[in-house]
Length: 239
Length: 120
Image (tube, rainbow over all chains, first blue to last red; front, side):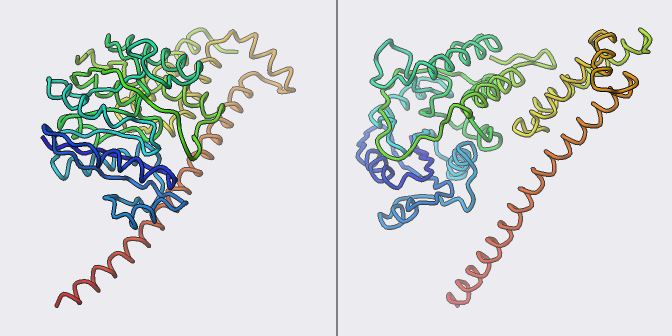
């Protein structure tokens, strides 16, 4: 099976080479693993790092945000007819050793597999702050209310999709804070979703883009998005 | 003074409008990022027509407005202006994006033309 690892990157000049190398280092007998870095209009030297090291990438001429960047990856995967697409952060927080496990779970018959930090208690080194965990639990509860599906880590950017979901996302994907909303969107269209426990690392270099004000906007916006996507106006409910 | 009949009509209208906004977002005709103003305003309109008229009268007197219904119109007009402002901001950004895209595509075309000439 052909797998594409989508690596969205915004101003990750310090981390991107290491991140791509961790993908290149994967030797899988079952899967043919490629990668593409989506340079989301970085203003630092990310592009120089990508070109000087000959890394496979698409440079967006304008910054689109995480939603637009990841969707570019899905469009690329769709056009090149990949079987599985993996979302993998460009800052090194995700662990590439889980990629094969995500693919195996897809091969079992799931359409979308989420790498969850919260599936097994205390398993992940880095479970993030209390506020983030609380926010995650509120969103998981909302998703459960509208779909009946239990998702423990709805904001995780470490996910795998099969062709059906690649086609869905390349056409329609939320612009900002897309992960929970896209889960709800997929659930409404008969997508089989599963999770596996994963380890995520602390951010090593560069800056996280989350501020307290943004966190409030994020919670309001994503909660609304889940609710509006989840309301079924015609009485149709897909599982 | 509003009759009970009018108030019921207005409440039904504003609730339907709110549901319409939600429906448009659900159908992806409204992008959620730009729709938060619409959601806020349609909720506000439901509240304004649903609360007791005596409250509206008190607010009007407090603000120095002669008639409660004048105040309701004022709120409506302010709401529309706020909406138009947010739309103008969005349109301005899109205009810049379009200009940038036109420029990039034009330069790309030039590079493709040069490449094709080189091939010959």
